[in-house]
Length: 154
Image 1: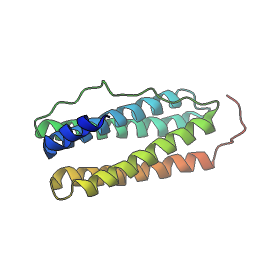
Image 2: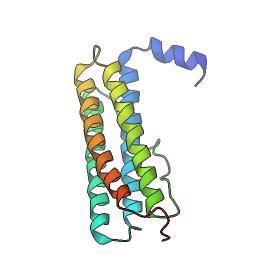
Image 3: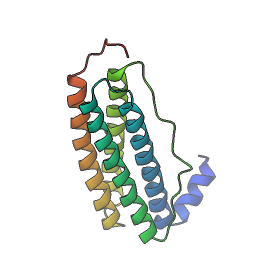
Image 4: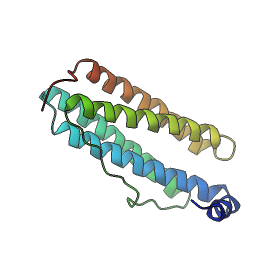
């Protein structure tokens, strides 16, 4: 982002920046959900695939909350910013990518909650809630990683 673009964004007021943060978070949730579903397809044990699919459903539910909040604020979010899911050579590596992405997302939500606490308490509360829930998702993925073999091949 160029300097002048950043200056214009700051001058446009907090509403536009909040909507931008909500849109970015929405796309991030969709990407994580897609990635978890793709990784669930390649899991060596069916019961573990079900856990990843449940996490993907939770990420989709987060995306719905973010879209609803943006709509409440008069914005519209689209899926143009959804990135490509990360792959991996084996189950363990794919799980570590999932964990990294969930941790980064949780950290970003905490930052956003603190940033918007004064100007938009409701949006800040939503970000804080999502940070907490993503933290719980990290613990589930961390447990799956602990029980997997980093040297096993697909």
